[in-house]
Length: 174
Ligand SMILES: CC(C)(COP(=O)(O)OP(=O)(O)OC[C@H]1O[C@@H](n2cnc3c(N)ncnc32)[C@H](O)[C@@H]1OP(=O)(O)O)[C@@H](O)C(=O)NCCC(=O)NCCS
Image 1 (cartoon, rainbow, N blue to C red):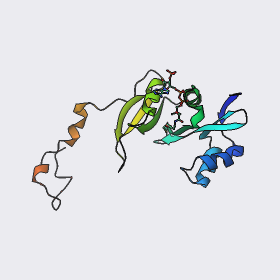
Image 2 (image 1 turned 60 degrees about the vertical axis):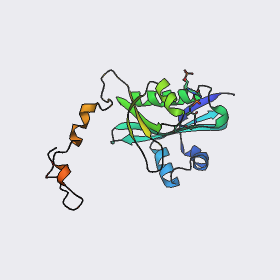
Image 3 (image 1 turned 180 degrees about the horizontal axis):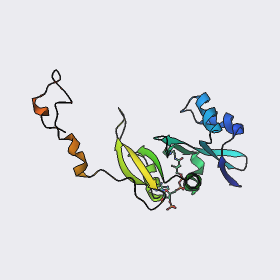
Image 4 (image 1 turned 30 degrees about the vertical axis):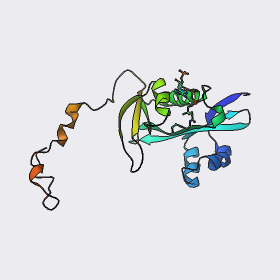
């Protein structure tokens, strides 16, 4: 490795990002670069990875993708990139950051090592459990895992008498 640099992507990074990040349309990729929602990592002149994010609920930074070329993994660079973003978000005044990853992947250990906490999840059709992670950036906790009591809303009085034909949300005692 020569000199590693991490920075917010600029229009000059568009060709390499468009070639590597195949998960979003190129128009959107350009828009996100303009809005500062991409970070890039270079080893000297060599492009080696990126981080892409946006705002969940239009107010909480959510890391959508973090990717390093395979030969650069396991050397602490993913952590550096994630911390660079975290510091940017802190400087931007955000109080928490979020991301998600598949339960089956190694990345969950990566996020836990970085201080993220699992707060829930969902199962996309045909895929494995996707865990939502949150990292609070100050000392006021805002997110937590649902406790058993939080599911009271799902104990629906009256549902036993309903069928697909007569189902009515208003008739349920929630
Ligand atoms: C996920 C990814 C960005 C991590 O970057 P990385 O440079 O490989 O990880 P780092 O070397 O910075 O490791 C950071 C921490 O993760 C943990 N970690 C790293 N490799 C690990 C492994 N193989 N198993 C378990 N934990 C591991 C370590 O605890 C390490 O912390 P520490 O050494 O400071 O205690 C990178 O591996 C990658 O691009 N993977 C493919 C894409 C991906 O899965 N992206 C994430 C989901 S979108």
